[in-house]
Length: 307
Image (cartoon, rainbow, N blue to C red):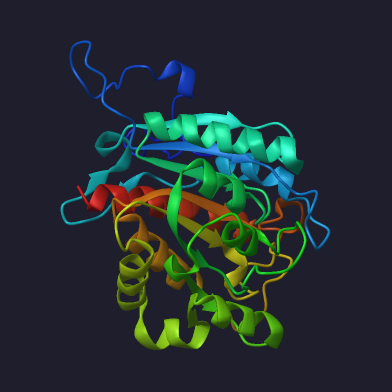
């Protein structure tokens, strides 16, 4: 679809490629400012427990970004593209499997050397494992209906794999864990490990500011980097039909957006992923992909608001 052009209404997503962004256009002279954020497509899908076309999602999210402006209304109003230096690092090829995960770790580690925040466009939830390790995260916050503590290697196991590889479970907080979307065995596993769980009902009762403040305190205890996992299937199926595991009664879009912006405003959040959206199974109006694109903008908004 051809989008209208208005010189006074810029569109989001027109970010320079990483290799073309050696100097921040917002700086003078030869001194380059460190990018505030780097976007990286990680189209993993091969180990998903549900059939998925999530490998098509990074490109779809980039296209959807063009439907939005980079404007925060404030007051005062802020243009994210003027306030932040943002770069696009393209997509990784074949991020699944041991070799693929190694490439994710290496790419994220390299981007962290250059950018304050690395945003991974999934892909399925398996990317959380390698992304968090590449960013050298010592704390983890998940916004997810599911524990992701399953055995084996899949999009249902990244949290368990991170714990087994040394991430302290006392510094993991899971927001939005839902009834009827998990098993008692995995609930007990989370409790035995000492993971902090804030259920979907408690997120709603307490509100975004309260639960995110607690999550940041726990995941960031003692310093170090925090990885934020944004699993869009935490949302109600009416707003996220493109997520294979979304269920009726999940978070509304505005609730997810509020959680994401609140978390991203903390400088200890060095990396984030947006996962579990299957662009090939979305509604005709692409509402799930559009929500994922808005999560990208909310991450950027958090960075801008904190400055």
